[in-house]
Amino acid sequence: MVAPTDKDLWLAGGRDSKLVATHDGADTFQEVSLPVPLGIDPDDYPTYSLPVFTDSLNGYEGVMYTGGNGDKSAMALFTTTDGGHTWKPDRILSNLMKVLRAEDGSPRLPVPTGYSHTLPMVLKQP
Image (tube, rainbow, N blue to C red; front, side, top):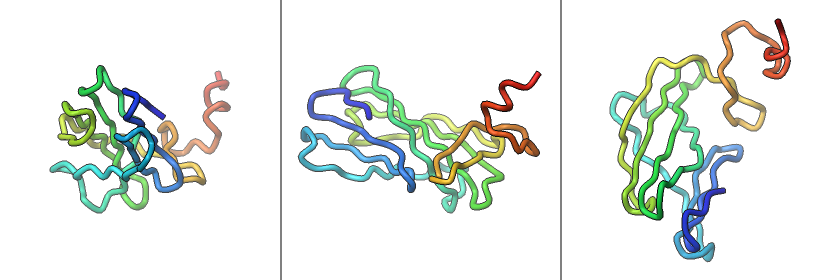
């Protein structure tokens, strides 16, 4: 949850990895759907993160796009200058490593293909 102002609140995640926002102090919430940038397959699955605001108007939102079988991915960075009412694609990173997903559908840190350990076990190995 991110609250850049008293009236604005952002939530991200859940099984469907939705991004929702309120601009009226939590009286109503709207799902935020950002346009798929050029160069990213429109059929790829978006995973939203929480936006980061530098002040009440300017912010950034990272969205990971993953193919249906999880083997290709790209990351898009969006920017806003109006408190999150509108967003524009700013940068795209493509050809990223495989994205692992937990049972709830949330992304996990990418690890080299072939590891069958959980991340804490991988970090403890010599």
